[in-house]
Length: 458
Image (cartoon, rainbow, N blue to C red; front, side):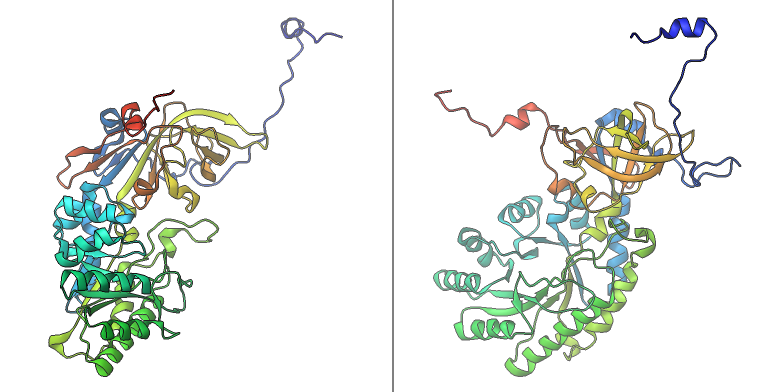
């Protein structure tokens, strides 16, 4: 049996059957009453056209706002300085170690906080003095410690094996460096982070202090703790500051130790929306002022004389840079999934937007949009089923070539991105005066093959 010829059916006056498509109408960006749209297209970033940026640097494209970086840095610093006499922010290199980004923080007066020899060397090359660097992390080789200790870098000791290594190097070099110890402790409102440092509640931190005093070659200059990441309860920092202040008081009264600084780490939330959370990040994320107020209330329990007060150090990363980062993407194709949802294929995937695994990033069309919004999935270009940059959102129709802008992508993406299937994209920065420039080139085949070698027998 043969199928009927559609052309003959049409000629005979019979309508051609078309399978109906049922689309649920969504309230929001568009409705039958032609009311105002819920979102406006994001056609400019800091006054610069998205189209002009893509024309200059290609798509996909990361864009950073110097204005937003400076605004966030000064806001946090000023909130803290109003509540405590000695404040220092140390920029978290692992969050984003692009030279241009780090230079903005450096010019604002930040020190550097690094967790590897690579980051240490990168900070030195950018112009940070060795004594402006806080060196954290559990992996510090003897070679890098032999460079950093005599140069005055503040070493944050993570474990007893590292303590023994630092002592042996100090003896061999004939120096008496001031060091810090990292402490882990229980804090309500934060998950347990017991992997790093010496535990306070078990007495391990006190054992580390006694070991430093008994060794006679090191001096304790600081305490450091980091209670987690994306902490949305400022009260956790009040408790952290209170416990470290209490330990500092104990060290002063029992051992006569007067600390140079107390480092509360980082972990403040940005305005992103974590997956599986009810409220969007814009509503659930505390202000920087609330974090600062909580810290000030806790650190107020220090029993130091006015001239002895230690410097309060914060290593805030995500909360300062996330909101300053954008990612421009371009539509490659539209598809209809079996369940009726629209699928949009973009030129950016999870290898570049790594934080898509954690967040439901805000994404906005970069041009005026029309048509009925409907349930949509945003896919990347990778030949992998996990390449989903937004799992579910109600979005207007997109045409091939249309652009979208992902917001709040400044933290961790350009340090955790992967060269996988596609080249990593270019990165641009918009200056406070409206100028823009490329701060990292798009990868090409030469960059990809630079470190490969073919054996002579192949």
